[in-house]
Amino acid sequence: MSKQKVLFICIHNSSRSQMAEAFLKQIAGDRFEVESAGLEPGTLNPIVVEVMREYGIDISGNKTKSAFDFYKQGKRYDYVVTVCDESQSERCPIFPNALARLHWGFEDPSAFRGTQEEKREKTRTVRDKIKKRIAEWIKTV
Image 1 (tube, rainbow, N blue to C red):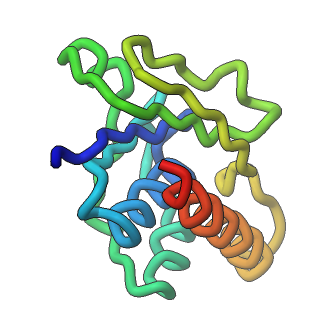
Image 2 (image 1 turned 60 degrees about the vertical axis):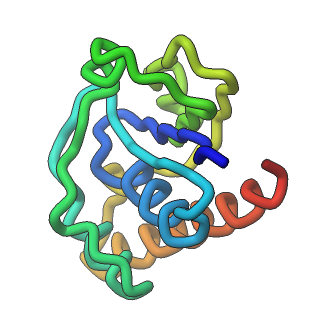
C-alpha cells in the first residue's frame, strides 16, 4: 500500500507547518509521506526548535521551503493542510491539484510578545494543539 502524501503550509514555514510535519512523521510516518512549505519561506523559529526538543524531536537541521517551488515541480498531494492562524488565513496559499484541502488555524509563534519564557509557554500551547489535532485526524483517514 502506498503512503498518502501530505503537505502542511503556513506563511513562513518556520513554526506551525514544521511542527505539524514533524508530529505526523513521528506518529504515523509509516502511513504518510509528509512535507511542509511556506508562502514566504523564512528562518526556522529557535523557540519552536527548543520546544520540539522537549518531545524528543530535533528539527534544528530543517530548512524552510517554498510552496511555489513544490507547485513548479508538479508535486501532488492527497492532503494539503494550511495551519495559518485565522487572521492570516487569507494569505495562506492554496495548493491546486490536491485531492483534499484542510484548514487548521493555529496562532503564529513568531507573533508572540513578552519575555522569552512567556513566548516559550505560548509556543508550547500551539505545539500541543498541533500534536492533538494530528492524533485526532489520523484516526479519520
